[in-house]
Length: 318
Image (cartoon, rainbow, N blue to C red; front, side, top):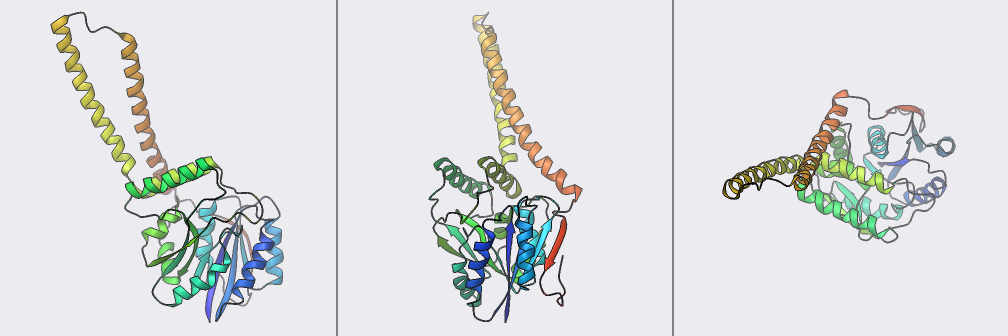
């Protein structure tokens, strides 16, 4: 029997959980030679998500749950799930059914073939998303793949099935500022991509606003590329050269024509422009410095307030 751990990060998913549980258990029960473990991670939900998880754990010994003391974010929830998972194979899925459980049999078959260490899912379209959000999402993938040595597949989702060896490798990366899409790619291993169309949520509303996605994209670029620092350095050097050329030009013009060094409005505009570039470069440095500051504090990635479920006779990780 292969033990399969399914990690499900949850944040205010009371509307989606019953449908998800019924769907995923129906699919997994049909998998051959599989002993499932459903590991739900409540990321500080403010609705009835936690009471529902307690109820599921009370009537199904294959269900375990972890509940955070507050909202730490999906990245922390996935990391907590990976730490607590006991399976030979580990899957990560969203509770909103945008990650279709019906793909699990094909994913399991590909893993068992021995040709792959990971089977992941990517969206081939973005139907149902606002046009501006789709535009910036695609632009992000193009940008990060140009400035980073870690390739991140366009449309990649967190939905994937991994071997225990790959999970153990991911757990060695204990950084506080986590960008899992990059981490999954950085550790390597042989990955097969399954393509699927975009699927609407089964219930509830997305927790990812446009602003949150922009911050998440910035975190990803900073976590896996030092190109912004190089851009800041190049801009600084470029403006030094431009300033030197401008100084020589003004001196020569003054010596030839005289009285030509006036024009304070243009000078003010130049000063404002150069100051803006300086602040932009300082902002880039500040972002890297802030991430370093958070890392050296060595604060825990998450704090568990409550856990439960599972077989009480089996030893469990936190």
